[in-house]
Image (cartoon, rainbow, N blue to C red):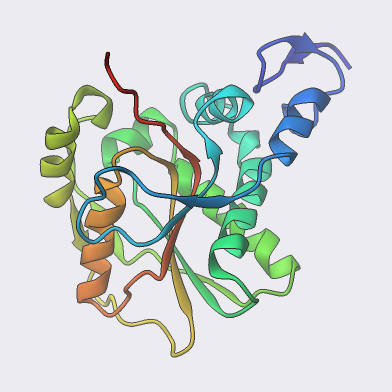
Length: 220
């Protein structure tokens, strides 16, 4: 009943829906998933789809969710991620959702696995639309430096050694599409590193689905 801060525009407004004002809801709903590809693309990166560019209400909502404890935003963001999965996979078919695992440090800092929450809501939305969905966590993440502090070469080196298959990881059922999930793609090295681990164990991702893709800035 009292005005609260919108996660998308930071204005204090009443009538928020899951923490987002009507104007930002409209802006987020107007986004349409499409293919994205970092340049250069790292070896092993599967075809990638994103909801939109990392900017505007999408960027602010992701930051509010990940870094400012607005965990209720997992529901609308997970629903948007489901739209990306549907666009990336195509006609309805069985899918196996594999979220990129958080490092132990990131999970502690964010009071839980932020991508795991998104994945649960994403799977729920897809199932409600008639998709046969399985969520699997066949990969674990070791401790590594925060990617924000690294350049592209540092990210690649850190990612290549950061992921290991869990015991018992095995192939997906015949006819299933394995979809690798993340929130943001920048250089693609994290998605590529996880994809390589999955491929060795018979879970080669057919696509990766993310909410936002950063745009490379060219220095003059």
